[in-house]
Image (cartoon, rainbow, N blue to C red; front, side):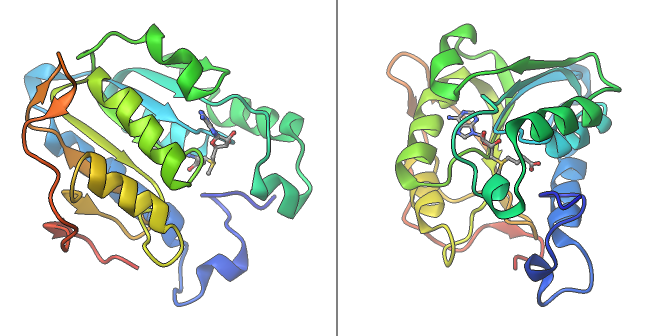
Length: 219
Ligand SMILES: C[S@@+](CC[C@H](N)C(=O)[O-])C[C@H]1O[C@@H](n2cnc3c(N)ncnc32)[C@H](O)[C@@H]1O
């Protein structure tokens, strides 16, 4: 079976001898413990866009999270389904298989904007956004979910690639500023120092787009 992380389409692997969608993501997951104080562990996360649960399973495997809220409606248009002829039934079956070892994963089978009120402000340590990749959609998810993040929490997502997904980069730069770290699979993460929860403004103003401050080989 062709998947989005474990066994990516051959044409996605050009310029590389290995599957950097897996390695880059794994590098990001392996970096996460360094962002949290040992005494604050285990922490809580939200993943927006889980698809077959490959990324969810990798987040769960690091053992850092008390609870993983995985949000995906498993319905609607998904380009990957169209490319490979998968139904949402196929995707859900894979999701269940990939997440079967973990009882700390809560699946919210809905769109992110419908379930945002289930989460208290200032209650989540890590948020990863990998849903739709348009500017509007990424901006909406960032703005809706940023207030849920604790002070000192980490927010991130996928497809920070200006050539392919300029809307993702623009939304990230506008809402949270330049990522702290980028990874080979085009994942980005940023630690948020201080948030004013009342009017939901980040204290450090978003900056003009610049090179990321810390980076592992970005493709
Ligand atoms: C690129 S896939 C996610 C891949 C997964 N993170 C991984 O790396 O294995 C995008 C997923 O986002 C979901 N999605 C799209 N819009 C969404 C929304 N507003 N809220 C939650 N999920 C959404 C789609 O159903 C699809 O399963």
